[in-house]
Image 1: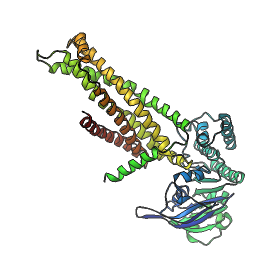
Image 2 (image 1 turned 180 degrees about the vertical axis):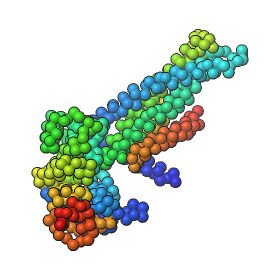
Image 3 (image 1 turned 30 degrees about the vertical axis):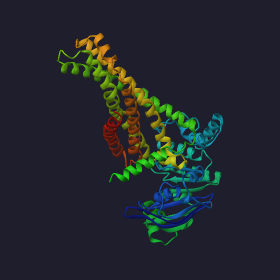
Image 4 (image 1 turned 135 degrees about the vertical axis):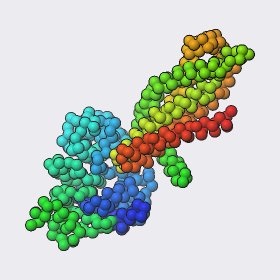
Length: 248
Length: 244
């Protein structure tokens, strides 16, 4: 479980996160949703240590990440898998080398063992045999899947996903969502997904946190989200004509 | 105004020199960078060195009109200016353009495409992994390039001098072999190592703190080259003042 307590983050005079506290549960897809500029990605970056919050703490199973030095953070970071919005694959490396990279850095496995793990991860994301391709040769959906394969290479306890469906067609987006859900169940990981895609919310949202103007505005499940009378949340959820029609 | 970036630069260097996670991975990266910086720059260094030598010889011969000065002095002037200034400084300025802009744009692109964030999330010391191999490769290979440049500058001078009839082969050989002070070579190597360090670290700093997109990557690359050139010229003066 990951606990976030009273997180504050400012950029210049812009107070982006204003005292956010939340819990993200093990074995569940925890979603952070909200409009553009609501602080979703900033919260995610504070959780994984890419931003240092001015106040508050992030606790990974009782370990306070925000108070740790660089060396102590490495232990937790090797337990983290992350899929970035743009996949963030290393351009100069093949698919195989991208997935093998964390294994090379942090394990003492033989090349054969590492290759077996790479092939397993690629099979898991339905990209078996694509080892030698380079990121420039992959489609957007394939890049996301390689990003997921790299994220799960080290059997992560915590899986972070930033905007998994941005730039993908609805069918591919569904495949990615299902993959995230399956992997969460398979690894029992604490999965945190940042999204503003309502299809994802209705598909995999087991524990949903809605941010509005840097504050936690609402928390609940996908079953509760359509029945709430929270005005800002309703404005967000039913912004599209499709969702409005569905509501009627 | 200058203290904030200077502090960030020093902190980045401190992080770059942290103990590597796995030496064998870093070793591979160092070899890769050595090929990229050293072998990859050999062509341009050879071309500029040959022409520098040729031009210096022809222009020195043009200015030495007195019959009281032996023509072998042309070889001596070429040798000393090549060892002390032309090869280390001009080569480094050219390398700041070639290697520096490449380092800055490579690291800058990794920054804006979140590849550096990905390294950090994995628990990898990104300044160490990205910058340290480049520093080691540059401080090893740039002095070697400078030595090659010295040789080619003298060779270029020899070809131009003898072909134009400015001096004979015998006069040139006498000039380059007489009164050689080996300390000038030490000064040259100190310059090469310092310039190599400045080119890689300044360019890496500019790339590492790039924010935005493609436009900012280009701006960082330009800044890296400009600042590296100024730093090379400034440290050139400081080294000359201290050592000579």
